[in-house]
Structures are given as structure tokens and as C-alpha cells.
Amino acid sequence: MSSSRNSGEKRSWKAKLFGGRETKPCCFCRCNLYFSSATLEHVVPKSQDGNWSLDNLRLSCYDCNHERGSDDFNEFRQRKREELKQHERHQEEMRLIRLAELLKPIN
Image 1 (spheres, helix red, strand yellow):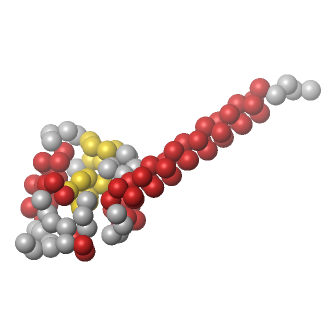
Image 2: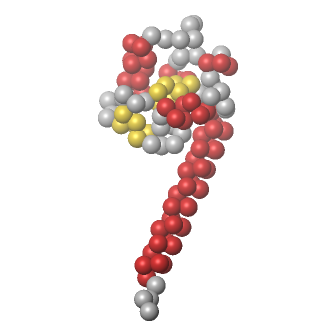
Image 3: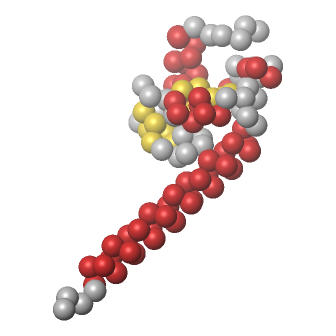
């Protein structure tokens, strides 16, 4: 099987993965993807003889797709989700600091 596919085949696979929905989450960072911005992600990378079957395809955002490269799918997903948790914790800490500043008595 060829390692590259034409745009018609890719659109068909994306449509199947979207399953009629308007948006789907990136398989890594969970951002909302629209059909036009979604990329096809190979669970087993093409560089490691991954195929183009639907079982081996997921939807991802452009940034995650290219950041992952040929890293292990599950390891990259775990690392990405841990980064997101850390970012969310930092954002919450910053909100609490701003709230504390607002609640300080004015003298």
C-alpha cells in the first residue's frame, strides 16, 4: 500500500472520523477541530510502516501532528495531556492571585 494518499481519499477518511459532527477534539490536546483544520494522525507513524487504515488514523490539530513526529502515540498523548494539566493549574493559580489582589483592603 502506498504511503501517501490523494486529497480525495484523505477527505473521505476525515469525513468518516468526524462521523457527521461539526467539530471533533484533537486526539492529543483536545482543542476543537473543524473539518478544514483537522489533520490525519497515524497511531503507528508512516515512517514505522504504519498504514492508512481507519484503525490507524485519528484526528489531530496541525501543531500536535507536527510536534509529535514519529514519537510513540500513547507516550506523546500522555505528555501532551500532562502539559495541559500543568497549564490549567498555572492558569488557576494566576486567577487566584489576581482575585487576592482585588480583595486586598485599600488603605
